[in-house]
Length: 258
Image (cartoon, rainbow, N blue to C red):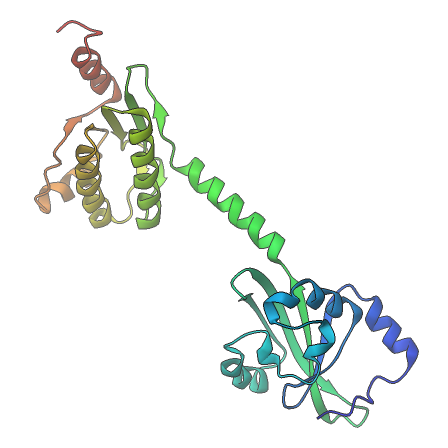
């Protein structure tokens, strides 16, 4: 184990303890030999997850106490320093870890310096913002006609965005007792025609199974060609414009005479 004589001066210890970062020092075998005050405070806050009674209990233990896959990382740490990675700890903490070599006054490698930046709050806020952005990117709007929804498909859609749309749509239809759903494809940017064609068939089936009628508007010519090429005929009313679809709904619901 590293004899911790590299940092002996009180002034140096004071500097390390005044730094806001969580600093850990390990020997060449990745055994923890020292931590600054910030690191001790961090471990006190998560001691139940590490299964320790206090932060001092980790001294002398291998860094694998923090991450079960740490042994797999040792090869990287040994050959690719300095090293930085973001990992999830205990399924709920996000940590930005930075590891570099610790050398003594003779330039001998005597251990490792690890800094642990707790970015859990920032990651949670980022996930919240991404979730909000996804919600906003898949709008589902009420229409003037009762029990009807408008779904404008704007921009590029991938499988994840289609899945999110489908989940939201199922919830809205079930909650509001929706009878008609108008899908407007006129503003969609189609990059993967095969994906979109398959999703059109899936959406049509899904909406029909929950008792609502799907109505498609604004198919673009390249998409129509792919539907024909793949012999996909959506089980839905298809109109060239939103005005035509609205007229159909007004007649169907009795707001407009035939």
